[in-house]
Length: 488
Image (cartoon, rainbow, N blue to C red; front, side, top):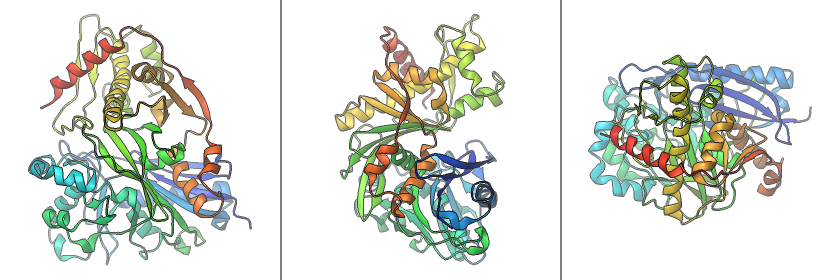
């Protein structure tokens, strides 16, 4: 039987997806299952690790049934991409998690991170990150300190990719890749090693940590009992790095921005780890053949989640896509500004205690104005990131490649183009995250000769050119004023 497909497993914050890709990058089959978040306390966000694994196994088996007629041997390789920073600690003897997965959005360690501020310069110099509860390190410490008898067990830590690799290989491989390691606040991105000083400061045993491997390489094979065949796992990338790879942003200065639950903009900076002076993050873009490519990143915690908030909490719209129709029913937001700091503020503000706010309400304000302000917030947040990115790198990109669910909203794309005064490019293949991991797996399996082959597969579906609007800076000034009002 010929190997016709590459399998991409995309374990995200709100859903788990499995996709079979053909050589031309088209999707042969897709299965998706929504994943529940729980909020046991204010600022806490958790998921059930067993449910994550069950969902991955279910969607993977289903997509193999759909696309391969149940024959997993037709899959050349697997690429895994995952929500980053989300933390799982499990007992290596039983294979069971000792606590729920603590999600990247979780803010429970905010006060502890305040105590690290005096040490933040060292953290940034080593890891490229800032002292924030967003990252994995303080989540690990919280589990070790709060789960009874945790430190007496034979424990393993992993971001979602490590947990899935462990499960898929039947516990034979405990590994991660350099992109996910670079999001833990424990990994020295210059030496490419776990940092002993950081581990000591946080009282985290090095024995818990996975082996850090290249993003493309050997992560073992799946247990035959799971899928019916031993399928090699050949690529692992954190979701935002996978999207950068999937958008073929292979040259320094190229930028992509993903609009999913949050918004994440990454600029490829080549083999230079640019230390941000503007509260952005320096991260590993990918590591191949031992060579590290870096990126500078701006992370916004709430993007598409703001539209979900209007849909689910405020009941303004029945479905997320209808936000565009309602927003277009008014000419502008009529002075309304929505700062969607529903889980604190990310880059470049980094205020975990900030709370969302809607400003400028009058007797004339309607749901349409608030919805439009929510979409405008995505453009303003992106401008925050891009202005900081340009200040750090001295590069002003002429184009921005976008992906994620909210990028299908034409009005949002046009607003972003207007605020950035650059072309916004939306690709034909919108499955950029899963495709990034799958295409790297294909590259490592010999399906593609080099990155140039992948560049030729990237095509844009539509470009959004900036329009000349005199109120561009007025709206942004109102946004900055509103942000100051929600910060603590």
